[in-house]
Amino acid sequence: NPLSIKLGVISEYLSSQIAPAESPDTKQRMVIITGLPEAQFKVQGRIHGKLKEENFFGPKEEVKLETHIKVAASAAGRVIGKGGKTVNELQNLSSAEVVVPRDQVPDENDQVVVKIIGHFYASQLAQRKIREILAQVKHQQQQKVQSNQSQPRRK
Image 1 (cartoon, helix red, strand yellow):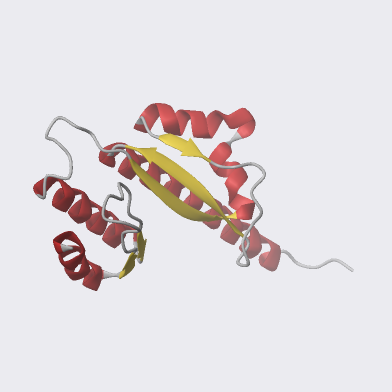
Image 2 (spheres, helix red, strand yellow; image 1 turned 90 degrees about the vertical axis):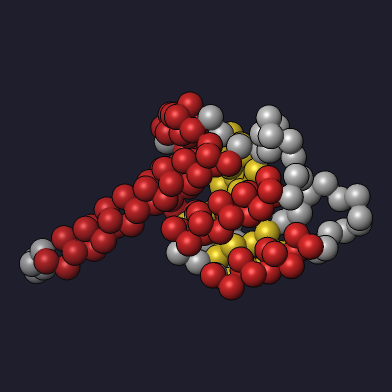
């Protein structure tokens, strides 16, 4: 498949895997990309551009991408927000569907999957906003640990 050869060149930039097509008429393929967020965004952009260039979809057709982000189970609630407020704001801002399954069992690393479904730029924006939320959670956790360490212990 010429597309997989060209995507193979892209995979040199980060750790990535391209799933082989299940059959010649398969409409979906999965690409697993791991690495720093900015590098992931670049690779996603190159893949999207390559799909357009190879005429996998028409110029007026907008392809929906499904992106999965692993999130610490303890931070999933922050992505959802009280009463779903944060996830609704994310969806309105990005025009992507953001799904955080409530009944999801965390994996062996205590992580759950957040799904983002939308066109390329909507997906990119939603991913960035989720990473911002996760960075805030991490920063707050670090501050909490530091403040607990700096307080004198009482007897």
